[in-house]
Length: 463
Image (cartoon, rainbow, N blue to C red; front, top):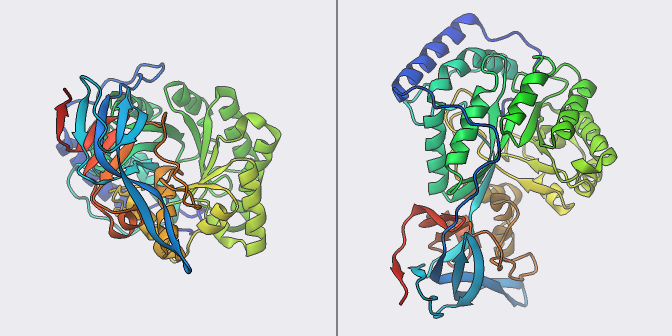
């Protein structure tokens, strides 16, 4: 989880503060749900997603850019109908195309069709969202203080995890997000229980929400002696092995990174390490991870650095060199964008071909209370931070909200939707992507695999 850049090796949070917060968490756990915790997930493959089939009529698609002597002057659009079969785009048809016999036609009301959004870093477990407000308290002792707090709070929050996490998924869907990489704690006090409950929830919601699940050792898996428990969490359905600050939290950079990467190889999983530590130790960890990817081709394209605050310490030349290396190894960076008074070098990463995503991180909990679960809002924030203020720049900012997909590429060629694409899409009352980002257009209808998961549209069966 994101916290301040303060040094991590300080005393734990004092006892009275822990006690007060423990009382609040216990009240939440008692009041938010009276039912017992749900049964843990059975091990095995996630259920297949069942996607709807229909004709989505009268939607606006971006088709290119209009240009004049000064550059791009507008985004061009066209009306179309999209045939969806079994959760995928089967055809892009003229606006007045008839619906195939027996196929339901839905009216898009002339709204702009965009790819739905992807929240690539969110903690659904350590949140009070869905229950009563719990007053935020002043932090003590940085990340280590919050970790000490977790040791008491996480077991108390366990009984209501399914209910709270489900409500956050509902919120994401209403905001146009249909996919998330979910971070889920694994630690000595709860073992693999959070992962098992979360796996069961995500499997139940699979028809309306896509996901990846990170087994995240917030307390460190070397320093907390969690390697067997982490392996059990991955066997229970986590898709990624997580890690945390190798030097500041996990007791030694080489040992921590090497163990993380070995587990990923042994169990054929992706990697997503939370790297908050700034400066030299953070950069050293990134290089050691990159060394391992370079030496082991099976890891290429499967490794993500979350937060990566140490990148903010690099000069332009060193940043360019490291970004070039990350891109060559197909390593991704996930950033929640600004952090305190400093700004992540997202443009430099993108300019050198690094895949960059964003996420909510935390919604309402003891790590933070400002998460909105609105990833389109993150695209607007990026525009404001990095000066992406023209039509093309604003439109292309959408890629950090969608996992890299935009209706037009930077040259103005239409690249979405195409036949075979997943029918993960959102309808907004806007004339183009740039307007949707700048004006934060409402999400009127949201689809995952063709299934309408939020909003409403008219539908009639074609003759």
